[in-house]
Amino acid sequence: MVYHEVIKGKVSRGTGAKKRKNRDKKKAHIGRYPINTQIGKRTIRIVRGRGGNKKIKVRKDNMINVATPNGVKRGEIVRVIEGNIPEYTRQNIITKGAIVEVKGIGKARITSRPGQHGVINGVLIQ
Image (cartoon, rainbow, N blue to C red; front, side, top):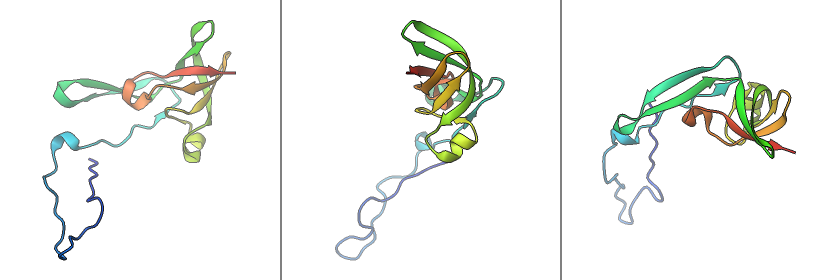
């Protein structure tokens, strides 16, 4: 699991004593490793969230809902043109803000978070 909390500012007090955390780590603050959504046959992972809620994470998917001026169209993702990180572009990893090529529609920018929302939505780019 991932847990990040650092002491902000100076580590020592004016007297030379070390600063201490004012509380312990809590289970509610534990994060998870990211699921890097790739292009392929749709596979999902259902994870238990806080309060027993279910979160759907997309591991692989090749379909996208694209918002166009004529309405929403569903298309097939061909490849990732531009990602947040160059390595993600090379590996065809889909993240929010990535630009993908959609078969028969054109280029689209991802507006959803596939690893959090369980669906891939995008907006057409002229």
